[in-house]
Image (cartoon, rainbow, N blue to C red; front, side, top):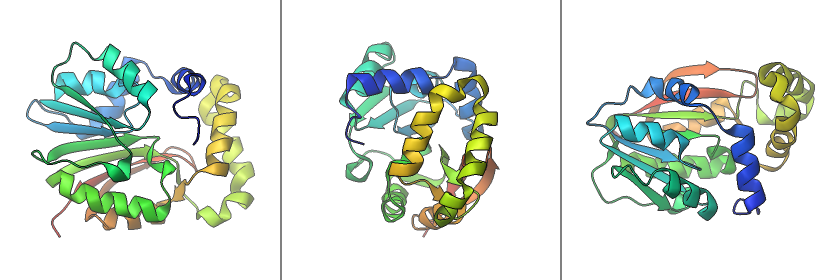
Length: 220
């Protein structure tokens, strides 16, 4: 998206998709972060998840390509020396230090095409330790992406019920994402993860268009 770095988009995204600490704790719960964990958040945004992960894990790294989001994150996380922020596109990211044991990405990987997702997870295999967990929350369809035009009435109806009073402000962003970016069906996500030898151990489908995947990094 061309305006990721614009002040208007940063303010809009934070306002629409910001979450209270209780929601973030619930979001991170499947990872069961421990003091010895090395955690990484791909698409960390303003650092809301890092603020809590940085207090639970020994190391918390955030990766984002938006300079403005990272600026907000640096300001809010300045008191957490165990948090490290990296300005990088997902496919350009590299890591030479000890591998991570826990990873997450929330509402970020749909920016990648299916082929790019596969390449990303193949690269991620080298960044994460064997047995590590990767939590993904994103646009995950319970139907094939090719069926999106026919499924759109169902998607919008479920979105209205899911978002409730927030539906009016979230609808334009959801429609833009569905129209212009690369949300995928569950089989495509599973195939992409397999390219990095990640095995899905848990899946939650919140709506027909949105859900979470918890995957475990296995050996080649």
